[in-house]
Amino acid sequence: MSALWTRDALEAATGGHFAGHAPVSVTGVSIDTRTLAPGDLFVALVGDSSDGHAHARTALERGAAAVLVHDPAATGLDPADPRMLAVPDTLAALNALARYARARFTGRMLAVTGSVGKTTTKDMLGLALGALGPTHVAAASYNNHWGVPLTLARLPEDAAFCVCEVGMNHPGEIAPLAALVRPEIALITTIAGAHLGHMGSLAAIAREKSGLIAALPPGGTAIVPDDAEGQPIFAEQAAGAGARLWRVGEAPDSMAALSRLTLAADGSDCIITIAGQPFPLRLNAPGRHLARNATTVLAAVAALGADIPAAAAALAAFRPGAGRGQLAPILNGQAALLDESYNASTLSIRSSLAVLDLLASGRRVAVLGDIRELGAFARAEHESLLSAALAHADLVFCSGPNMQYLFDLLPSSRRGAWAPDAASLAPTVRAALAPGDTVLVKGSLGSRMRDVISVLTAGETEAH
Image 1 (cartoon, rainbow, N blue to C red):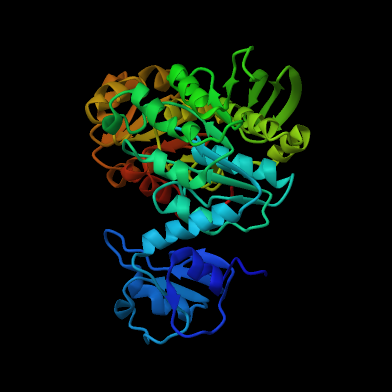
Image 2: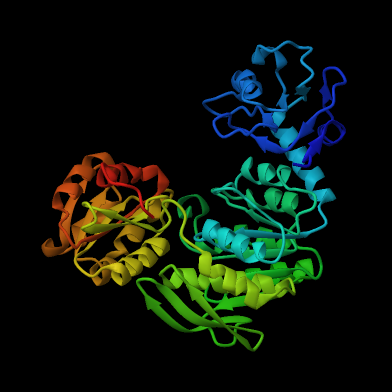
């Protein structure tokens, strides 16, 4: 494997210094010794509850080529260890690596943000572009102040495409990350009520997300949903950047328009018309929201001037990630679990309930946990789910104080049970399930709906 970073490049990028003069060749970058691979550079970040310096020795024992530290004494290593790169601040150094990697990268850079669907769209882009050339894609949901620079620090110089994911929880977080990425194509998946408690309004969310558009170069392309809040904001930011603005969605006059959508339990078929030219698409995963994501992806491929049919064909291999719509048998194969436990917003819960309806041949069971970070909007947002729950679920279980607002509105015939937390609810859900049921589990990450998944899958052989 060729070197991702040499000793000279590491020192030039970070301004740090290795002890001694031994050659160093790094093939990856890690911030976690549990997933570190031999040859990685281990970056000792300091978090709220952990200090990476305490794991530097373990990193070297597990084959790290070097460790990046700002407190050598805290590592317990010999100060003269030639594998130790000392800098004033490791997070700042990680950002410096990101800037250096971005500056030397000559391929095509894309970045994805949005209230819902960032990671799924990012993964779809990875599949589509991977069929066209070497593609580097952000791992998992690495979209924050350390995830974005880590993605860039891992970027091979010879990749043809790079796909970054950019997220936010509070105002002012998108712009510095966008400046680091400097995308040629900026994709906004949705504008919805995620983090509404911090942001105050959908317009404020649109303004924050559009910071990705502001980072585009002249001639770049902003790809935005045609039905989202914030169209004037998107247009303003694109004009300010000198970038093209492409709207995508189900409006016939959009640059990329989804039509003739046929939804089924085993996937969907549709036509995506881009600049007047139709392209057929088959997705082997169900849901209108996934077809919308695929429309956004193919618009990005078109904006790159790349091979749209080849990218569309590659999307047939897409499967939802862990906690994002994977389907698994439970009750010894007599029932099915739709695992959407990774995160939630009102928009994504509605989409997931619609998928539950598509998949179910028997009773439709929904297990819903709190949506976090809604602040004063929590009650109204949770209550707004009533019509979707009644349309797509026969039995609804709820956990958390906010989801109780929904539970209290349900007719008695649709009520499963409510509990203050997922762990308390899980045994009740398990006891209520019967052969033929299809059960959806969804909630914000902080609502710990994985506790329900664990109980429902206990003793099962994993099969996704």
